[in-house]
Length: 74
Figure 1 (cartoon, rainbow, N blue to C red):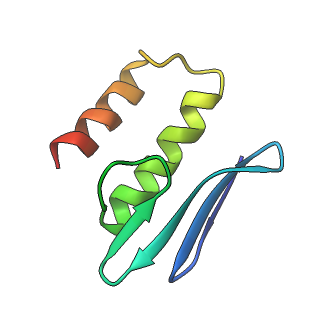
Figure 2 (tube, one colour; figure 1 turned 180 degrees about the vertical axis):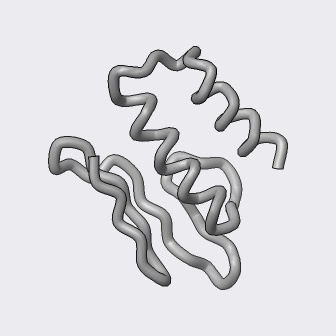
Figure 3 (cartoon, one colour; figure 1 turned 90 degrees about the horizontal axis):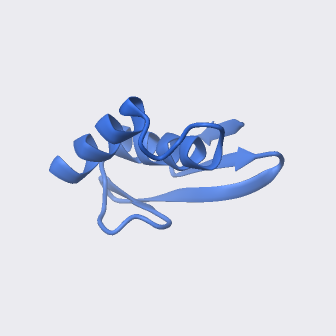
């Protein structure tokens, strides 16, 4: 896994393949596959969540459920 973050763009890679990107739009971020704009910290959480869902963790793992709930409730 590789998480790349700079001022205007973020991406997450798994085995050399980019699985999600986030692009800054003013104060908010658009994350591929996410239904709404997020703040910077939420975008990082969404990218990490995407990686975890594609890795060895099951979709019902407590840490993933908490992250999803945090992003949906924000």
